Length: 144
Image 1 (cartoon, helix red, strand yellow):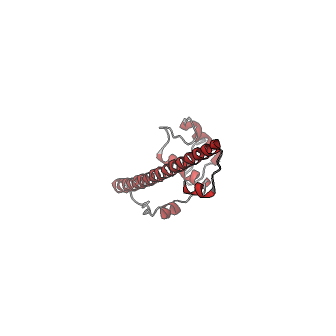
Image 2 (cartoon, rainbow, N blue to C red):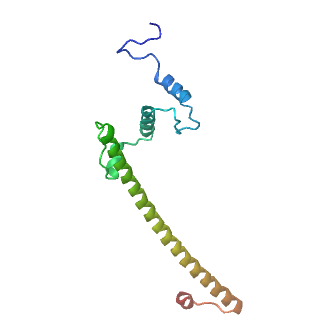
């Protein structure tokens, strides 16, 4: 009866001991990289702890991205289906954001190319006028 726990009584081990032991048992090489030995419950708990330390609330995230909350009471096939739907929604959002970012990058690149062409033309005209000994008036600069 020495190593057994009576039902309904909490363990004497502290949370730190459990966290330390779970880190040693999991065999993960780097922080945050789960190993195959980690159970789904352990991964869920680790994610919740990380979100709490970073002050992230899933309800806020769901509200910000206009996602429907996942029903915790679902089990089996229904939960899997809902999680797959959520995953597809997140993929669609990710691809939309990536395409918007690519569009902004292309626009930024075109703007920079136009600026560099204008600067090259300006400095070429300036260096030619300096070589010829003629100054460039403001009117000529603005007409370029």
